[in-house]
Image (cartoon, rainbow, N blue to C red; front, side):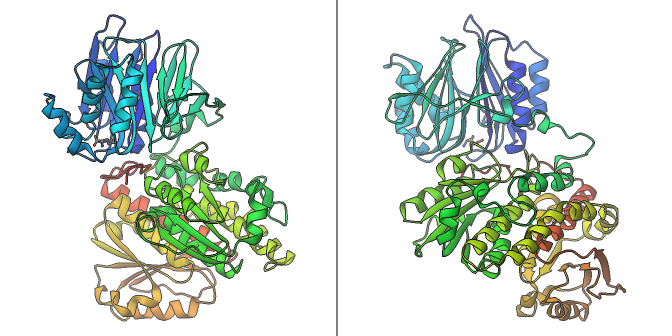
Length: 610
Ligand code: GLU
């Protein structure tokens, strides 16, 4: 979940390491630490509870000298966030950082204690440090000790070790958590995400599952899971350098909300002509597979799950292909039936979501026709392990609460649905042209929706002092309500729930009173009249209504009902469009509540643990 950075250089690396951590802080952020070794084998370890800035201040206030180092920002899984539990962990001369979970840590701890090792933290990670120290006693090299250690570890990890006595190298193992190696000139680096290293290099090598590598200033040596030496490809990255900059915005989340028109343009670029979706642009194998797919199984977590739920309506209504959507952590632990010609689609912003990745690996054994991922991070595990990947091009998303990744996923799925429908004869040229036109118009409409910012800001005080909120929608707008409620929960800490509006009378109506704002997503479509009846049900019970309504929907504001008028747009892309004012609403409520918008409590960005 957390961030790892490592370096072997001639110059002092503390600053590079801390800067790398800063860029990864959005992933996990309860404590941070660094260990640096100089040429004389002096090791300095600094750890701090709290944000990377605390660590940066501590590092600046003392001499942390040396060209070899490892650093970590932690999202605690075992043991509370504290300085003692912060990484790097040490055993004798060995310092270790670790991303992920060691599932058999209790067993290993008992064995190591029997050997006389004394534990100073409650983390699962500390067993790695002691194991490496133990194995090194009978190994020829640090990398061999790490290989032996890796064989004993169960769970998911990316882990890096350094030996104070030999500052010329760092070693790293990857199993379930991503590690990328960055190549410099006469210096080399590693990190859990290339973002951390963009200020020092553009040349990267991604480790594969089971790889163990040794990094010195001049060389990188990789061994695969069987211990064989192996060459991995080095790729040049063109990721944005300044993605870590908020620019004129107060928060990354705000910046990312406002970036959505551009993110959508990028996601659609080269993939739609004036009137058609270019199927080949979805993936090399896409046409052959989309032509014969009879069922789509979407697997995702969190916001990505909500986008899958919304797209399900399109798969069935536009492409005529049955579609199920399931939460990855549920899917991976149940016996499921694979239908004939079934396509597995995983959705994830980071491409490292542990449950989704596990579900993909499991599903590959179970005979799906093909496994596709819709993902925002090139080179991520999901991308590498799927048969083909359709990349959203949202750009780096840093705010923990996902925004542009959601809307670009929806745009990607709408393109995919259109291709399937056409290839299978359920969407004719005219319909395809209508969908593609709606996609072309969408960025400008979203630009327009963003101008509602001030109006929405004015509503926020009504929510900020409430404890609960209800979001209602029907059809494909029900998942949009789900996503809206998730955003509000994540960043304002207000309990929010989404209901399919028709379900109100089956229970939630009992909750309605003047302390429960009810937000309604009300585009003008076939379900409008039904939705209006549901709104009346709330009104009749004294509920406070906030209706985001199409200009032609015919709602009238009065006491207890505020209307936010949305310019009319195509019904097809309206779910993407209605997402935007909901994001703005959560953002403004969170601002009033004074929460940490970009790094809400208890959450992490790329959920690389189960
Ligand atoms: N499981 C380790 C811990 O609790 C690492 C967590 C992380 O990935 O940050 O310290």
